[in-house]
Length: 389
Ligand SMILES: Cc1ncc(COP(=O)(O)O)c(C=O)c1O
Image 1 (tube, protein in one colour):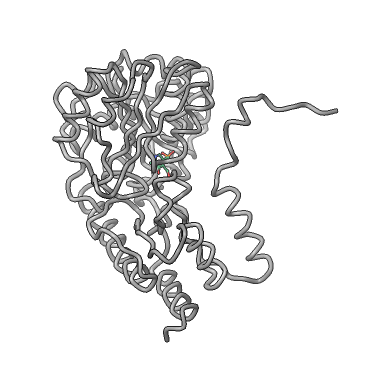
Image 2 (cartoon, protein in one colour):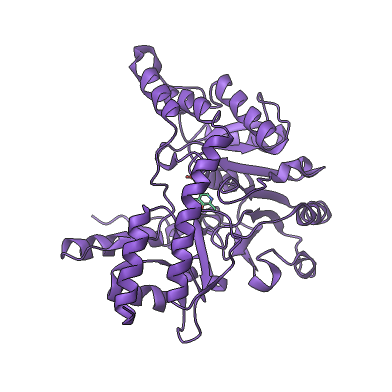
């Protein structure tokens, strides 16, 4: 019997990392000890209090039932408090905060709630591949907007405004930006708000990196009037070292959140209560937590800079997030070529920038999510592969 998958499946590829991890697994199985500096999955643990909250709550036999679709009030309150304390944004925990099972699902849910065939959606190039995949799965048409180093990896809104935007319903933005580590300032966000109002476009800022290597965490919702045009996704995956726990949130006015909730309530049956209780605890992590996290990332970042110098790559020292984004030297055709060469000759995997879109072709992205000894070992291997001893 053959059953053909739905034609929409032709619109999306298997996630790059899923394929690459298979290749790395095969290399390892054949005895090659590959150092993986590709994926942004924090290797450090969540705070001890967070883990205690999870295990204590899991011991209670009453805590294993289905949960409400909107999360427990304590979690919504903790998320609203977090927005107030971290970004100075006031949100009503009752209807302006929606906990998510990771922000990646939020990208899909928002897309399903707002987009359909005939709609257009603005997606950053380079950018997080899920914006594009989720948009295509809804049947909407993706309109890439190119980001460039020359423009600080910010969209040129004046250029964009010259296009026919009449079908554009939604625009994905992501600052601090992955993969480039670029930040946006308030002036840009104000321009973006006006752009959204003029063209009647819902802005969604995806904001999981604001606490990593960034002295001034910002929420797009702190900009006056932004709540009228924007939603924001956030996540505990990176900032609280809880990637596998799958805790995210979408914040914004009730009118924008409600369709997302309607979709989501048909997809899952709430979040495990002990996870929610632990997330409440995690959201109390204070400045000491973030300072220590950043001390570790800063140290690793220096090692990656050293590695990039060896490879003759150029980079901005002031980038945020858990990666180093670097421009490859001109003797390589693309980041793919450099990445493949390092994998083959040094058994070190670094992500080619092209997987984030064509505008990332001339770059590579190195993750900071590995122990310092792995960076040191990578440097030694690369030196050896290049014949520098
Ligand atoms: C820009 C961006 N948004 C969202 C996510 C997904 O985060 P979460 O773990 O909350 O689903 C990632 C993860 O890599 C990311 O880089």
